[in-house]
Every structure is written in structure tokens, then in C-alpha cells.
Length: 289
Image 1 (cartoon, rainbow, N blue to C red):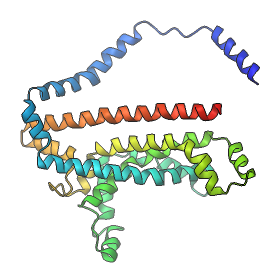
Image 2: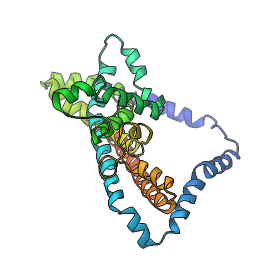
Image 3: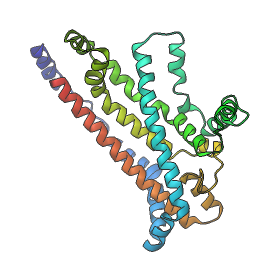
Image 4: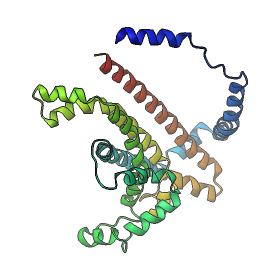
């Protein structure tokens, strides 16, 4: 087997490589500069005109701090919830057979395609005090969902759910059944096989999906603004605060808050890349062992 793989690698190294046109990288730089780098640079340039003391004052105002807690805190809660249930859903789609499975698999990507305002409107209709779910929840437990921070968390769970599922699915599909069978032959129970054989291999994908869902939830606006009361120090999120600052013609404050969100996005992107690199190295070590 190893000799066959070595021959295929040598054969592949002799095949002519596809020569891309020399102008492709120029088009790449021009397009990314116009569509990505210049807008971000313009915002950073605008923010640099604010003095450091004013920047810090705007970025750490009590109103801004309250929105950070709502946006970042509830996004973390939503991503952790999706980390658990996303794994269960991915497991059901890959390892189980049940009626309506293909339809469920197709509908799972609906939060990606559905306009966020439409998603917020649908969630508000369902979770309001007169909604299908909001009314019994309020009658039984006295808890309001819509127009509260709980409704914001529900919206974040809704829009970030597919990330964990779609990240875990290919890894779960590629797992070798022989490892599980070997664990069973050695006397391991189903729980031990899952926690010691399967879960460690899925953990990098789960963390990557959770990180992506977390970043998506933090930047969500359309669905959250519909189901939230948008009251400061209650359930106001940072993107909504930026819109409010723009409506008040307070462009410096909006730019400062946007810069804070940009910095967070860059940090989140770096974290996701590190998790993916770690996952590839972990899987490589697992395969070699």
C-alpha cells in the first residue's frame, strides 16, 4: 500500500502544473483593494482623527459597555448552545436514517439564505406574548421572550446554528468505523467510545464552528433589531447603537464603535484560523498514529 502511494506521488510530481495567467494576481489585488481594503482603511482613517482620550471615552462609555456585554455575552451563550445541539443534529444527519431527513438537511441552511429582517419578523411573531411559543411560555413560566435579552439570544441561536452543523458534518462523515469497532472489541461502552474515540476527533471542528457562529452572532443586526426592544442598558446591541449614533449625526462615535467591532472581528478571524490549524495538525497526528 505504501509503495503504491509513493508511486502515485512520484507520478503526480511529473504531471505538468496548471499555469495561471500572470495577470490573475493583479486582478485579485485590485478587486480586494476596492471592495475590502479601502472601505476598512477609510473607517480606520476616520477613527484616527479622534484623539486617543476621546476614542477611549467613546469606546468605554457606560452605554457602549452595556452593549458589549449584551452582544458578546449573549453571542457566547448562543454559540455554546449551538455547539451542543449542532453536534447532535450533525450526528443525526450522518449516522441516522429517519423520515424527512433530506428535507431537514436542506432547510438547515435556511438561516444563511433568509433575509435577516424576515427572520427577525418571524421570530417576533412566534415568540411574542401572543405568539405560538411566546404565549404558552409566558402563561406557564411568566417569562417574556420577544423584546427582551432572551429574544436577542434566540435570534442569535437562529442565525448561527448552521455553522456548527456544517463544520462537523464532513469530519463526522470521514471518521473510520474501524476505530469504533476496535474500541467495542476492547470492551468500551458506547459512551466511552464516543467520549474517548469520536469526540476528540470532532472537537477541532466543533470549536471552529462555535467560533464562526460566535463571530456571526456578534455582528448580527437585522433579526436582532426586530425582536429586541432596543432599550439602552437592557437589550441594546452594539450594531444597533452604531445605527443610533449615525441617526444622531454623531459620526465620530459611530466610527469608534465600528473600529472596536472591526478589531474584534480580526481577533475572531485569527482565533478561527488558529483553531483550524490546530485541528489539521491534530487530525494529522491521529492519522499517523
